[in-house]
Amino acid sequence: MINTEAKLNSKIFDMGEIEMAATRDGFGEGLLIAAEENSNVVALSADVASSCRCNLLAEKFPERFFQVGISEQNLVGVAAGLAMSGKIPFIAAYAVFSPGRNWEQIRTMICYNDANVKVVGHHTGLLTGYDGATHQALEDIALMRILPNMKVIVPADAIEAQKAALLAAKISGPVYIRLAREKTPVFTTNETPFIPGKAEIFWESKKPQVLIIGCGPILHNALLAADDLGKEKIGTIVLNNHTIKPLDENKIVALAKKCGAVVSVEEHNIFGGLGSAISEVLVKNFPTPMEFIGSRDIFGESGKPEELFKKYGLGVKDIKEAVKRVIKKRSL
Amino acid sequence: MEILHENKLKFLEEIANTLRQDVIEMIVAAGSGHPAGALGMADIFSAFYFHILNHDLKNPNWVDRDRLILSNGHICPIQYAALARAGYFPIEELKTLRKLGSRLQGHPYRKALPGIETSSGPLGEGLSQAIGIALAARLDNKKHRTYCIMSDGEQDCGNIWEAVMLAAKYRLSNLTAVIDRNNIQSDGFTESIMPLESLREKYESFNWHVLEVDGHNIEEFVDAINEAKAIFEKPLVVIAHTIAGKGVDFMEFDFRWHAHSIDKIQAHEALSQLRTLNGKIISDD
Image (cartoon, rainbow over all chains, first blue to last red; front, side):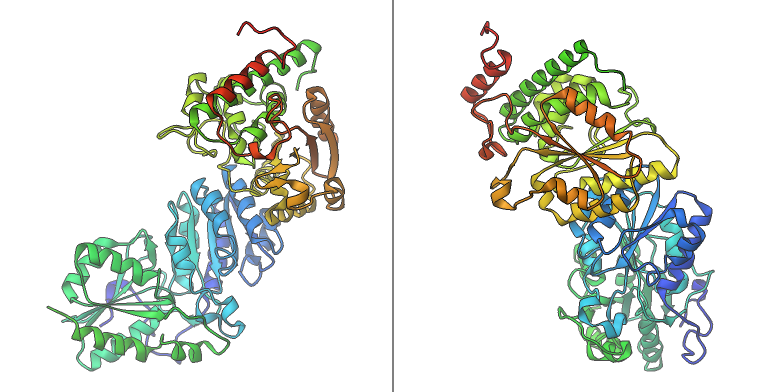
């Protein structure tokens, strides 16, 4: 059942009633508040400022917004320079281009320099929908989590995205925030705990057999799956692992010990993302059978997000099946 | 910047010669490195660290300091030598170049060494960072200047032209770029690898103010830097024509010395040439 301490939206399973908003919208609001709180916060975009929701900051503080045009490599360098002069730059662009196209610039100028830049990757995952494979970033978590000094945060809804923007401004050093284009359920609340590096239990059955660890808006599918499974007497724990790096290793290992099997759920290639990060920790500390929900090393295509989720194995049904598969591999 | 009197000019030329000797000794000790570009830029580094820059050795992070961004980080031995001779760190430390645990990394590491503004080495990235620093200065109403040294070879990088456009867009007159036009890069001569000419017209058409100087004429270079301060509408680039490997006859104009180790015999010959100004002074050696 829902963990009441997580203070989730009471309409969490009421798909007709629950508010829908994109994580990018929450980010834009958070960025504006961060800019109001700290005059060093600035934003840069590469010809996608309104799509990436930098427009709120740009309208209120035009002198603190820099439009660099379609130049993602330059975007990183300019931000690094601003950071080395004490500014707190947020760079917002589509993730396939930033941190995709400009990965080495991020590696050298942000991470190696340890520059206080916040990289905000928009239009990630299959939620990017109609634009098709070229614009659906399914690799960005991997690209960012392998860089020293970089922290990686994946908000699950618009409220978490707002919190992530505010907290990133306060974290000293590089941060990557992963966002999505499409509106998705706002299932957390302002009171839901959100501490970078600390995973939160959102669902816990009395006798959990499987630990479902997810991040991003797809976490809502994991909760729907847990609810359905509960009705079938299959107990689970659903962990909101919004911070991929640093990973909440202690909690993941402790809960894996409690459940004996794990399913990772992410809107990312199953190679290199959340699932990989978890398996690295578990193999070292408590080898646990795992199933991986994510894109299976293939590119997406154009379509409605829900159609894509179904076709590429990211739906509620797919998560439920993965849970049932992994139960058979449990040794406990 | 103080006026460049004749005695100061002579002093800067002597410093440049000393820096060249340091570069040879460092690369010999390291067993690898990039001598040609480093030697070619000795006069300009002498001018920057001993005359042009408003900086404070005792407080390398002084907020009002002028910033010198080295984009083509592989010529760092010349910057390390200049920083050490200026007093940023002990001269003896120059011998640690490229050695395990050294602050003098093979390519500059910002967090390791005082006086290094940005980590560099991957080409084409310095100008973007210099723009960020110049924009921050403008936001904060600071009067310091930002200089960015680039190589000619790295003008191949698309990142540079993204930055060139942006600096013009924001009319960054507090930013001055310097291009080491030595006509060589790793694989050969610039005009055969990827023709850059007319480099001047390229920058002019991107709305930059362009000056061309003899990069071994310190007086001319200092004049150009001063002229930059009088240009208020545009960023300025000084195309400094230099001789790769300057001061060592068997390295001059030869792209093979872009990245090459120096053996002890070559080093002896190179140092002898530098110490005697290529035979103009009788050596005690």
